[in-house]
Image 1 (cartoon, helix red, strand yellow):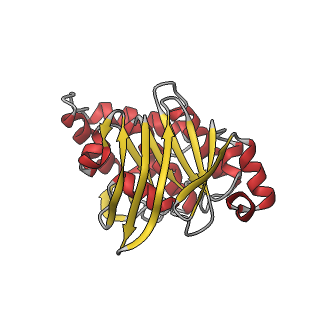
Image 2 (cartoon, rainbow, N blue to C red):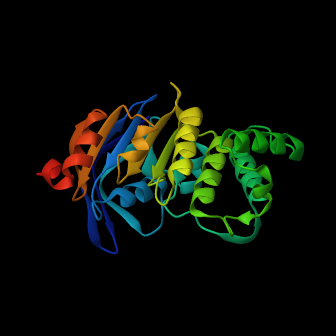
Amino acid sequence: MLKIENLHATVADKPILNGLTLTVPTGEIHAIMGPNGAGKSTLAYVLGGRPGYEVTQGSATFDGRDLFAMEPHERAAAGMFLGFQYPVEIPGVSYLQFLRESLNSQRRSRGEKELSGAEFIRLAKDKAALLGMDAEMLKRPVNVGFSGGEKKRAEMVQMGIMDPKLAILDETDSGLDIDALRAVGAGINSIMRNPQKSVLLITHYQRLLDYVTPDQVHVLSKGRIVRSGGPELAHELEREGYAEAAA
């Protein structure tokens, strides 16, 4: 699904990723853990195509296609979803309208029929119910007045509606209380735990992995993957910290 080889990337001419190599097979959930400044969010933004993040060396393929030859909207239409650590607010734009336009834009690019208003409302209500979210909240402007937990639940609803092949989730557990964490974990499992889908889950802490058991855990340090292992590696990191794992 996702294959990264010897990836180097800079932000404002400062090297952040320094030869990162990683493969996420179809049907698997992989977690990336690491200290602040390791390059976790930079990796997510580079894969998503955020401006200002320059790839200077290396390659990445997504579902067999050259990822860096694709524009951000083409990556989304091909089935990539990027979840943000801090979802942005968009005053004046209804969440429902935002989601419907986003979905239909992707469907058009794939040559698929757009959903009618009634079809989309049914879909949005189903996905909101799955996350334990009142669908009425989606009538509000995007993330405006939402708590941290509500923003993350809404983002999971968005992921459910878009139904991606690959979800890259950047510290989705940031700022969540126990109930919201459990709900988000359940959402990831119900939407993305599928033989045809994959997840790259970026997190500081092991706690989210209590609800979303990864196939592999990778330690990112100084812009490179320095260690990989099974779910037990996350518990080791929780006990011993990153310094020992990155040594």
